[in-house]
Image 1 (cartoon, rainbow, N blue to C red):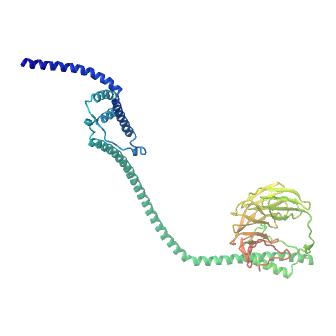
Image 2: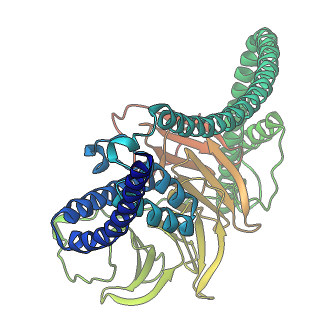
Image 3: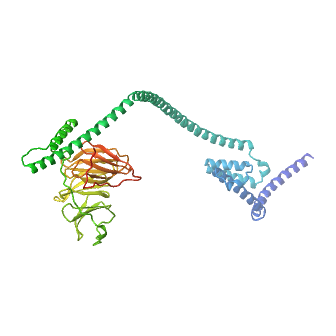
Length: 484
């Protein structure tokens, strides 16, 4: 029995070995048939799904900061083989990945490992990786926040220092302001004590200067009367005796000169009285005037026209910054004065006719010489536009009226300002000399006309009554002004 049992066992063993050999052959045939069957398609589809999943995970890892298309993709748990494969790819271990893929597919084809046995990567590991990423991001943000906080702290310290400096300056300025306020109050109090005295002294000074001017004018008038009386007595009697009237006039002149207390230079043209002969002139009949000729020369409006004192020549002033001289009555252009930088408003001939003076909106007064055919001097003391100019009969003094509320008297010998007439409160629009006298008349936009003594630069008389601006004034050549 034992031998039979042993034989059976041996036969079984031999049959098993044969079966194993046949199984090996059969398996190889099955593998060949298996390659051409339908079951490998399922394996290939599973491999394709795994590859797609790995690609999706790789794309997610590369573009995890982006939003948009990835927002619609749902994240699935990662299986072990994908985790190993992704880890090796992420670490750049390409040879290990190829070896792993080869062994993994061989095991799966031999059915040694099933998908149900592979399992998933634990969520704690994935969560830990996410937490690591979050911690890294937070650390980076914390570092930036610390840098920003440090920068702001430095800026705050700088602003505090600047605030302290400005506060210190503010306190110092406030102290200086309080000190100045105290000084101003003290000065005002001190000035208030002297203000009545100053007003009284100023009033006395004006009264004395006006009296002085009146006395000087009376003396000049009496000297002229004395000269006329002496010439009349000599022509009547031929004996060189002086009448009682002449003597009285001489005494009055001497008394007035002693009262004035001022001796004028004989060379001063404003202090020498001049005898004026009576001017007899028939009245002009304006109705007989007829337009003879019109000639055009300026490019802009004409503001003034004057005639030569001896020759048939006229000069026009225009807003085109020039004056032009015309021969009358033909209207031939003789000369053009170009030198002002603005409109020309005032012009006047020298009494001998060899010079011309012009005033302009460029705040200057120019003196032109016909002999030299150029501007020989420019007065620029006015601070605003100059409206008009006027020559004294002596030809050595020139007056100008300006928008700066003043009129100025110019000495044409020294080419300097002899005096400034201040008193108008608005623009002085025109000025004119009384014939053969030192009285200058000014017309102003403050609705007044004033008479000035050019020797002392003081106002002798002011006329009120106009309701609007006064632009021009003139003297009657047959009568003279008598301030007495």
